Image (spheres, rainbow, N blue to C red):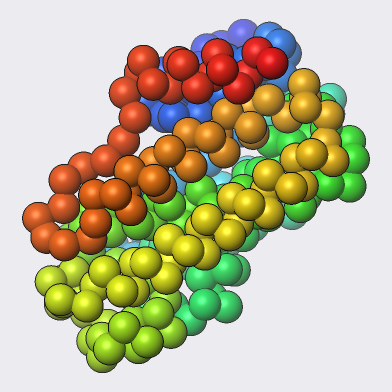
Length: 279
């Protein structure tokens, strides 16, 4: 496969995903935007392995295949289309092997259907599936300061915690429960069964605790971004505002069943991209 064909592949993955990150990626110069398309396609493809309704051994084989691909990639011999699309970004932006591997580790945690992890386990999960992506992204954006990994940690945690709150009903249907056991116990919920927790009258108290942690991480991200190159980190700033708005909507909606879906329309995302991406 040629480099152009590999790029067309990752562009197709991004185009079909409907991701909120698309609006942030559009703010980047072409070479960096294409690099982010490749990073996102990698994330999407390993995430799909963890989410597919397949036997556990099949999921493990798929993730092991990606582990092998990362090793081939850093040896200069990728075989997957997305791996080929990642070759130039790795070379141009010094993307680290350990961050790609961390995401695969996170998908392995997902593959076994997480249920009420400890706060420590949840932070590790978020670091692997979100903060690692932030560390890769900050390097693609062109940020070189020490604060870039602080932003990746705080913003990655905030985004993933917000996703957990937004998608908890869908996750419960898959047998997953990401609300931490400490928050459940403080709220008076003894069960760790996803469907039981989703129907529990004290669910809101547990969700409020996680929402408070997400808001804290957004505040930390905002403080770290002040020490970064604003122009380079515009995509991160846009995502911070997009997810801050989603978190506000979730909190305003409340946690009682039935829970209406929450999200931003294209017009809202475009307005945020223009408002915070062009300053």
